[in-house]
Image (cartoon, helix red, strand yellow):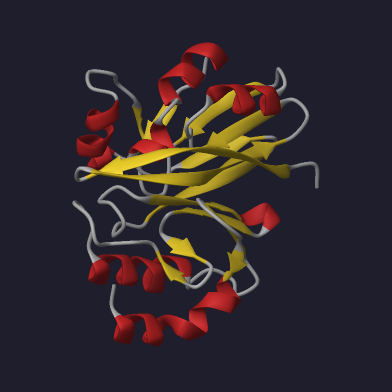
Length: 208
């Protein structure tokens, strides 16, 4: 299998509802020696461009519209001549960071071709209305954005988020994937479906 996954980490500020938090973000490159898809566009374009290394970028896919995941999407799009894909339910968040700048539509069930395989978009609202995870069946890997982390679901205490909705998305969409699926998260360490799925009822009881 020629396809591979590479990680770039950038640091910066997440801002929402009048608050600001310093965060480290994971950016993922999915592809081979000739072409890649970039997952998320956080904080600083240069490390991402350097990691691309001159390869053709098929798309810049934003898992959701929070500013720390879309910061440099327009800059990357211009520099790398690649479309930005974001679920339209997150346009209200996108506009807070990039007012008046357009992007292409990411739809549930959409398939993005790269390096001889396909990435499947899974709409998983809850952390935000348009949150979307990306599933790479060939490699058995999921790119969960801020929907699922090691230890539980993404935060739902801010505007445009909802705890019952994210629980439903995780239960119905993510935990339906093969148990051995590796989960590459938007922040921090990765996990797997089999490591997280036994804890769903604990998360529900705990709330968020």
